[in-house]
Image (cartoon, rainbow, N blue to C red):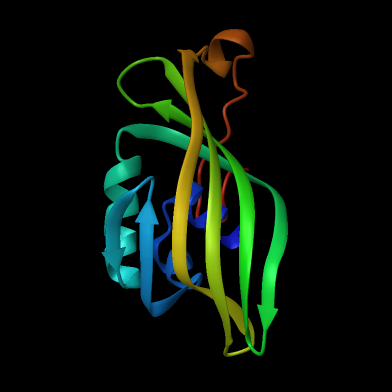
Length: 144
């Protein structure tokens, strides 16, 4: 899940592919978004396009079921989304219900159901206004 969060926040399509099986099925907040890692990448890119910065903080995860080379996991997340056009910060409480499979020495999401439990928004204050020179620059390794 840390890789998934980094992929979203860096808008890194290749890193996102490392999280899923090729034929993954996903539902985001009740919308049957897609089947396949390519479609998920397209859906996520469109959903995050209105935001200049995001930060997905993965919290508690728990195993719901463990089998031979597969498991079901529930992960809580708080997502911070800073709008590109207006100084608005959206905060969302999310849960990911994932069926994962072990393949090529790593766990991959094979089926995902993202549930939005709550959401709020508030005016955002630029860190530059408060602390000049404090904004991190993005690079391929994330904020510096």
